[in-house]
Length: 509
Picture 1 (cartoon, rainbow, N blue to C red):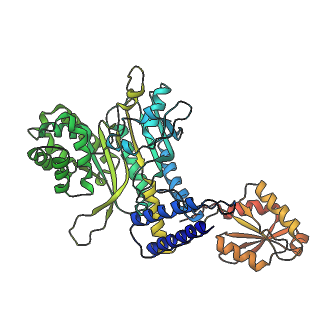
Picture 2: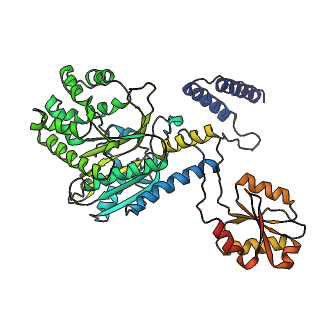
């Protein structure tokens, strides 16, 4: 007994320590370390008199979403899905886990972030890391050579989460892909158009889409003297240039990855350049780069891409950026990434990128990796980084203290006097059967004022009020919550009148 009491005291003291660290806003690592000790002590303590105690938290890198947050998320999803459908996409779904071998070797250095599961009945499985590799497996398995699809689902990464920046271990991806043999750059241009349409319609601020081509990168590495075996690892270093200065990237290439300093300097001369179609023209004249077959093909395609982007009216949103590398192994051609821009603090300064919100590219070899005969299906696609977008929209709503509707109820069925529950139930049932979104309060005799207050709090635009006189006259009193105006509507006309008044889509943010 004394031993248990001593353990309980240790648990209490450790709990106080954890609470104190949280109040002082100590580092996440320190808090996590002390929480782990607390959980260990609680485990030693065992169940308290047969009652199990739970640690009430979500797993690291995950979160719950309140009705308010879900209302915002649904609005964002609706915007994205309507754009995908406008461009003629079909929807598919795939399992949340795949055979481990399906995912292995497709993500380069990021493969270490794949969540592996325990052996399940003789199958080694992993949670999907993205939606692209499962899509390629789906194409090869079903022998499809032509499809335009979208897929919105959760993916999983054993990453170090930074939840304030929209970086999680479980998160949604919104993918759009075009698979099939088509003339160069037409599908690629449409993907960039879709990206711009979605980011513009979400109104999350100015953005820029960086574009490059894996063939230009590979050609550039070749002429700069990077050994073939180091192409991919140097690629992942270059990809960090949007987050860290060139000096740090060079130091990683030379110090950690064994690249000669003069080779790194030659790479630096190229990857620090960015511009529009004029930079493409300039590099086509570059004496070394223009001699490399791969780079020449990539530059030729980019020149054509810019022509189509101009016709689509989005060329001003696109920047040819030689530092863009996109670390994933499966990209084979054009690659792109959209970043939100921070307004310049001083006049004349360039806008700063504050984080990637969408990305994609061409991956012509991925399906062939799954096909028994190695048949290739050219593919190009994009993925919208919705978690970061949700974070931005949520922060904006909190700052503005704007009210968000969490339901789509069009009308509350209310009563003005007592003993009218049966009449309210009959009317609400009629409205439901007619496809009207309706509610009533779960009380036999609610006060009218309480019913009206509920409408104001929930943002319900209309109240259908039943009274004894109205029942005699065969009418319902329809009240507008915003204007407080009331009109008598014949009961048989009520559905039509509610639909007329609520025909505008309900705005939730």
